[in-house]
Amino acid sequence: MDVLSQFRLDGRVAVVTGGSKGLGKAMGLALAQAGAEVVLCSRHGAEASQAIVEIQAAGGRGGAGLACDVTDPAAVEALVERVRGQWGRIDIWVNSAGINIRHPIEDFPVADFERVVDVNLRGTWLCCRAVSRVLKEQGSGSVINVASVLGTIGLRERTAYCASKAGVIGLTRALALEWASSGVRCNALCPGPFLTEINQALLDDPAKARAVVGQTAFQRWAELREIQGPALFLASDASSYMTGAALVVDGGWSVA
Ligand SMILES: NC(=O)c1ccc[n+]([C@@H]2O[C@H](COP(=O)([O-])OP(=O)(O)OC[C@H]3O[C@@H](n4cnc5c(N)ncnc54)[C@H](OP(=O)(O)O)[C@@H]3O)[C@@H](O)[C@H]2O)c1
Image (cartoon, rainbow, N blue to C red; front, top):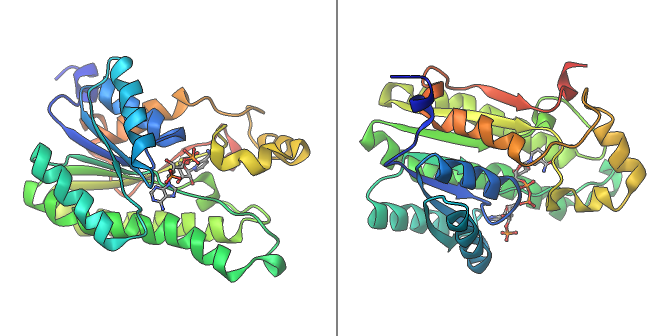
C-alpha cells in the first residue's frame, strides 16, 4: 500500500461530536475530504447541518448534521443507533465537544466545575461507552478523544479544564488497553491555542490572550488547518500501530 493511500478513508463512516464549529468542524472537513461519510453533531442540530452543507460545498462527503448533547446518556445512545441504522457502521469517532470556564479556584462556582467535567470528561466517556459495542463487533475502529495540551501541563485559573483534559488522557489510555484485542484503537489529540469560540473570553482580554500565545515556541495562534493533518493521521490506517497515545499539537508550548 503506498503511503498516501494509507490516509484515505473511502467507505468509512465518521462521527464528530462538537462538529458544528471550531476544531470539530475542521476535523470533519478533513475526514470528509479523505473520503469518509461524516456525521457532525452538537447540541444545535441546525448548526451541525449548516456545517455539513459547508463540507459538501468544499467537496467533502457530508452525511448529516444531528443534534446530540453529549452529557445526556440516552441522546448519546440514540446517536450511535441512528448512525449505525442509517450508515450500517461506525469506523471513526472523534470526541471534540468541549467547553472551558476560567476562574481562580477560590471563586470557582461548584456548578461551573461540574459543567466543565460533565461535558469534557463525562461526555467523552459516555460516547466511548455507547460506541464501544459497535466497534468491537466490527473488529475495527479509531476513536480520537480531543484532550488539550492543558491535559499534560497546568495553567492557572483552569483547574476544571486541566483536570477534565488530564482525565480524558487517562480514559484514552485505559480504553486503548481495553479495546486493543478487538482491533479498536483509541488516541488522544492535545491541541494548543486555536482561535475558536472556546477562547472568546480570552480574546476579550488581549493581555491574557498574548500571554497564552506567548507560551508557544512559535509565538502564535494555530490555524484551523493545522489540526486537520494530525486528526486525519489518527483516524486513518497511517497510524495503525498507535493506540493510547497523546498526540500534542501545541506549537511547542509543552516542550519548554
Ligand atoms: N481551541 C483551542 O484552543 C483548543 C485547545 C485545546 C483543546 N481544545 C479542545 O478542542 C475541542 C473543540 O474545541 P473548539 O476550539 O472547537 O471549541 P468551539 O469552537 O467552542 O466548539 C465546541 C463544540 O462543542 C459543542 N458542544 C459544547 N457542548 C456540547 C455538548 N454538551 N454536547 C454536544 N456538543 C457540545 C459546540 O456546539 P454547541 O455549543 O452548539 O453544542 C461546538 O460544536 C474541545 O474539546 C476543546 O476543549 C480546544
